Image 1 (cartoon, rainbow, N blue to C red):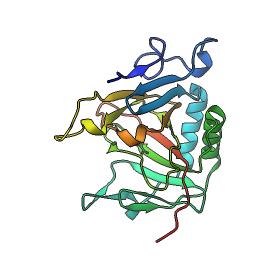
Image 2 (spheres, protein in one colour):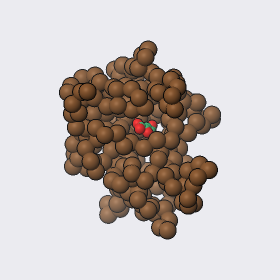
Image 3 (tube, rainbow, N blue to C red):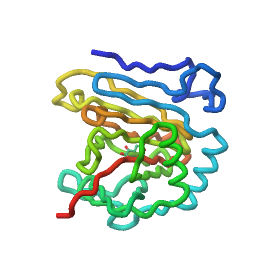
Image 4 (cartoon, rainbow, N blue to C red):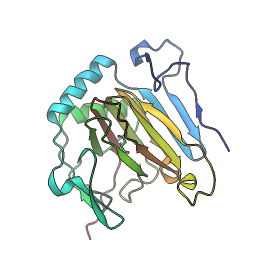
Length: 237
Ligand SMILES: O=C(O)CCC(=O)C(=O)O
């Protein structure tokens, strides 16, 4: 079994303590950290310097309008639950996204989201037509283990996850190593997603690995995460 491999310099992004910002990268050093394990392929980097990330977070806090009412519930194992965070989707008008029993229609793109989306595209070469935004008011807010494997996703397209605000743990768990019926013991992979960072989750990560953002009681500051996706328009039933 391949072990988790991160190609990075000691003390580089994702850990605690002082992290170098993108503009501080010495020439010749790779800007991307490659995260590899069996069936997992992700790349991580700081995308925005601190000043720009601060400015974008402020704009997101002022301009993003989160879902309310029925749209804040999900249907899991036959029961409706309030999600322990705020959520909203923005994107191209003809698209919808069905997640945990609820179909989400996107709000129209706003300039701050286009700014982030364009930066991701210019940095990675990938285009996106939809974004799911999650806001965690503090460390009590979280998202449970899941895979992003909805049928609307363009097959094999990557998901670009951009984070602002509090640095939070992000955990990958292999599907064969979950719960009582685990058939093997592949170690979970824990990352820390920093302010202004980009995590590219590439094929086949979401086939084999679940991910979550667990509660962290000691985190007091808010965090906003945007997962940019490439969706296909699905005919309505
Ligand atoms: O907040 C995060 O980093 C994770 C978000 C997530 O898992 C999702 O949008 O599917």
